[in-house]
View 1 (cartoon, rainbow, N blue to C red):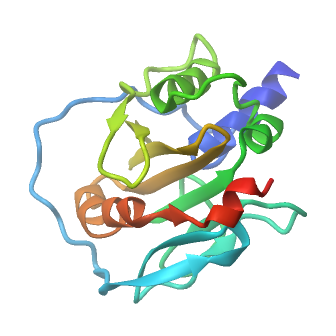
View 2 (cartoon, rainbow, N blue to C red; view 1 turned 180 degrees about the vertical axis):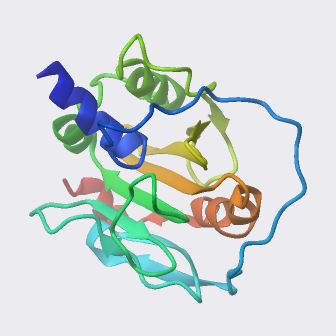
Amino acid sequence: MRTLFRCLILAILLAGCDAYGPKPTPAQSPTPKPTVLPPATVGPLTPGRIDPIGLSLLLPSTWKPPVAHSDQPGENGFVLSPDGSPSTSVFDGPFLYIIVGSTAYFHSKLSFPLGITDPQEQLQAIISGLNDDEPDMGTVTAYGDAKYPGATVTYFNRNNQDTITLLKVADDRWIYIGAQAKATYFAYYQGMVFKPIIESMAVADAATRAP
């Protein structure tokens, strides 16, 4: 059961559970490098919506629309990527994996701790729950540039750079955003796609009362 739980959490937090691959390398603080452009750059961001979860956000005009992460009933996770793939494995990217839900939803799907309303404490609790022998995934810090209070952490996974950002819409409503891109191109996608999209996110009032 512990192994199954660990695999489920890693599937979300580490963008795909790969039981036979190497574990993520510890977070590092390398000397900042110049932004490297990927082979295909991103077009202008335009307003969009993910109606099933009541989320308004900016979307890259040259990327495919967000798609559900799975076809399971009650799926609240959506993936935004250039080709419209729902996959979030370590071999994919760039992508944003976005989940909107209540504390109860996250608790049932990810064993989200109950009774925590501070986003930094909540994100730290999730990471700490992975296992004591997991490598350092970096330091959880406040994220203050979005419409909602939040927390974020950055780590490295194989050749990827990843971030997890958790936004508190209300005491019982959260937005989880997992971002991944090749480490070489992460600075570009962070500046052109990930950060502007996260900062544009707004949840409709009706959605704050949904599961």
